[in-house]
Length: 569
Image (tube, rainbow, N blue to C red; front, side, top):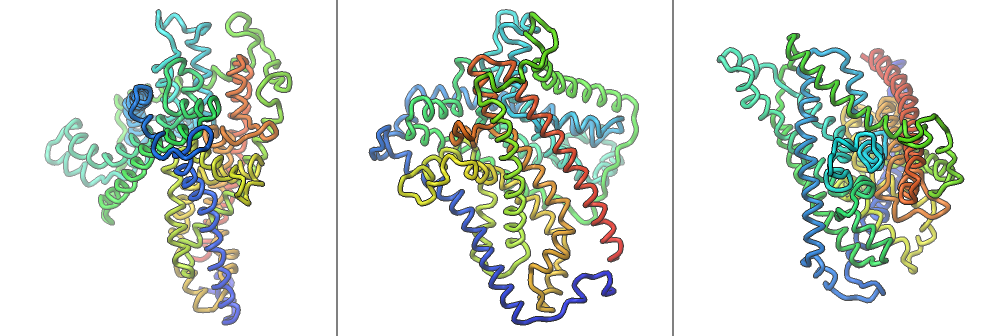
């Protein structure tokens, strides 16, 4: 390896600088740990304390938990579990068939179908509820399809949640189906097994862990979602909306905390199952596995294409309905085009200030999240000093995956709004909204960074250590340039998540920090449904545009990384 191609070879040993580097790395590792302790662990602990208080703030012990045994809670739990199970039962077969069509057939236009299937990720969860109102509401163009039924209730929630959760399940199942071992299918075919028997004896066992993970994720997303039930739930109350009513409507923080703790159980269970499933899934893979290459077959390819067309059309109709409503004067009576619904400053909800605030939030979250997550993952994966800090950081980094956004938001109220807390100065500020959003979506970004760092040969750190090179030199000259595509992907994920988030920030915004996703909710509550659709459309357009920019930057960074690796080899 020549010195001109390896950025580490030309470095000179500096023992004193290396000692300083180790101390500095340890201090930064503790800083990452402290960040998660203060902005994640302590707010969650604050919820436990608040659950033992009444409306006046007096300690009442376990009195609030007695509410978990009354008829009201049983009704809420029944409704929440019911719509979650129904949504899961619909989404998993749809997502599996779509993923199988993408991975196991030779149908055309796969990139286009994949892009269309991921469209819901760009929209707030409120958007499908708005679309359902325009399609099946009291004045909906397809209201006749429901007969005497109504979209306001459990089936409205289920339809909206199917749109919202479909891409999340699809991404898991695409990965699961991509891990197939072709040798198993060759053996099954040679033994005379037909396609149906191959599905039950080969395909289903190989993807069962992916199916379990997807099902648990969809169930958790639905039972903890606030947006869709708030828009089309009507009188059909669920736990997530009840928390909002208890905290905002009745100022009953104790009962809201108790219900929030209840929402932690399915999320934690889902997280534990997912961790178990990941370990089992790894055990199925071997070094001798051969990737399965789909064979061109006319009838299955046509059927797969038609199925994907139907699903994609449904997704586009759901999104397109809100977009169309944003530009139509009065749906469905006056279909003339107009831009009047974008005059947000003359409507309730926060005006254009809400949109500007969301841009500030998204940019701040992308910047802070990208730096905090990547450096935190770097300490965990690549640095060997401060083992306690690294282990605690590694544990806390995956904890937000099991914490619903509304629960995290409640914790921030109780912790940062406490009069004796020196961090009280952050309460009500944009800074706290940025930090809360980073913590809310920390886990997925952390796992992305860890995956990228694991792909980087540990030889670089060993060479650096032997040459007494400080870690920041290796990080700047080697690690960061190679991992730049992953860093950009993390920043993109944070930006889009910040633009669409509702649940984690619904309790924390002020009139000066109102966000566009919250403005959608407020305008719908005020009866300005068309304006809400316009704001949701603006969120989708912004998210799509930023994704395109980040995609181009990632592609450019990936090309540079590939050229660097090619020169190194």
